[in-house]
Image 1 (cartoon, rainbow, N blue to C red):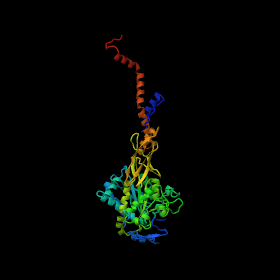
Image 2: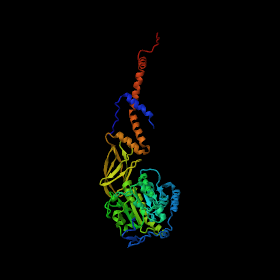
Image 3: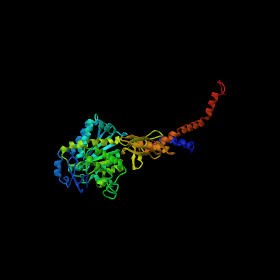
Image 4: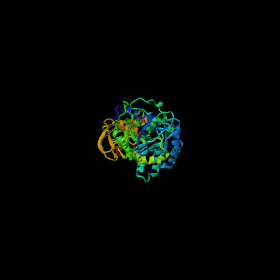
Length: 499
């Protein structure tokens, strides 16, 4: 229902003064790890043997030998920039910050419109979180180049380029890689350096590592739907929660547990042998059930960024020989591609509009029975809600100043498009008009809100201004007006001489 603006009751002079005045306004433990009761060994076939093999924890010289054939940080930077030159039509190269020692953290974005905000989901891969787990950084460069070489003829690669903004950070910890150690140059485990939901650790921003701060800033700048970080030392897809409130080891489910299990299974089942693991049923595990950690990156993504992140252990051996990298790529290729595509191939996607003017509303989406809210984008009011398939969901769209709307859908194997048109609440039309304009043009700032509100008032009162000005003219020129009226409508035209 539209609400008509009320006219002023303060009198003609006040209206005139207000309207005319407008002209003067100014415009530790690792996954697969060391320090666990049991340690894993084995080859690419996924078999495990229980022993106490440590993966050359303190033997830097031995790791240097194993690192032969891996890209150095300089090699990696050259590879990223070379990719940008070769595949510039579908990519953008940018940095999210620098490591403790000043090494740029380069990102490859792959899309048919790289760097442009669109109403489509974003996915990110992060590699080399731990310096001594380098397989991910190698596979991510291979992934980027494979998409570039095949997106014209491969349907899955083409789907990703056209429907997803894919961001690839090959190394989060270049310093740790150079030093052949787990932590960064400041000897901090970056996967324990994020704010934690259960315990007050790492809550001082200045105390966090530059790599951690770079990720946190990145999450504010890009609205990721889902993501995955690549680790080594085991073969399993790990999902939240990573920690428990009582610090005990047991299954601790997050609100989207079913969806996370589906995403983890997507990676595991497309992998060559991850799903056949004897240690982890179906090749997936709840993090807290494996062993609790605190200050982890995947829980932070989910809680603070609306991003569903997995922690992927993609190599039983942390430092496999470089000659094994092509095989590891083949084992993980389809898993990586299908996981990235899942942000557009699965779940519910749509936009939220206002019934008042048809404009986008940056509202939010919630699912009945799942205590988790997904916010729509500010520019296009698009939302992307990942959900496990083959289920019935009650979907609610809402925004302050508007009446919420809900509907029930049955989500089958693919994605569903679902738009919402919300009606303004009674008496809130003026507020939501101004708020909607501000949310869609956030660079305008507070002044934009004030000027927009005043412009709306001026437009609604323009008619009254014209009437007021006309009345003043009539009063000032009243007699002349009467004389002219008499001559035009009175006796026939004749010549008169006034004495």
